[in-house]
Amino acid sequence: MFDILVYLYETYYRPDACPEPVALAKKLSAIGFDDVEISEALVWLGDLTAMAGVEQSLTAASTGTRFYVDEEHDALGSQAIGFIQFLESAKVLSPLQREIVIERALSLGETPIALVKLKVIVLMLLWSQGKEPDALMFDDLFASDEDQAPRLLH
Image: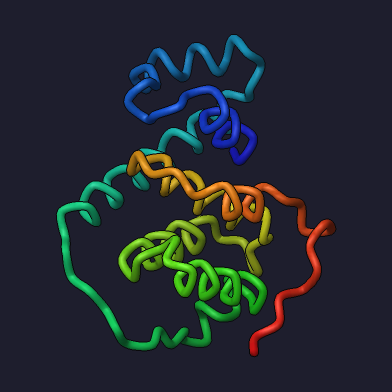
């Protein structure tokens, strides 16, 4: 599924440039993606788009601290939570966007979620809202986990 999401991000500059789901599914199938993965990706992306649309209509601001319940901490893992906190402190994610990222990550049912997958989720959220991370953040989102030194909180 993530290969399809990355393909969409790299191929279509904006989400409105994507064909309708039926045509997109045919195109992805013709390229060689598995039909089950196509279906999963389109459902996941549809849910993301619906949530991102709601987020854009809300203007609530949060100045509080996000605490993760044990189930969230177990499912996401410390590395993913740290990365989410980093993105929020760098103003890449708003509190509402953070919640969408968390929900979409939890919907995968993987424990803990791989950091590379979390980065794709963040990119797809920004893409679905027509936003683009700045160049330094883009490099950070696309760098492989092995290329990066661990983040230190000061």
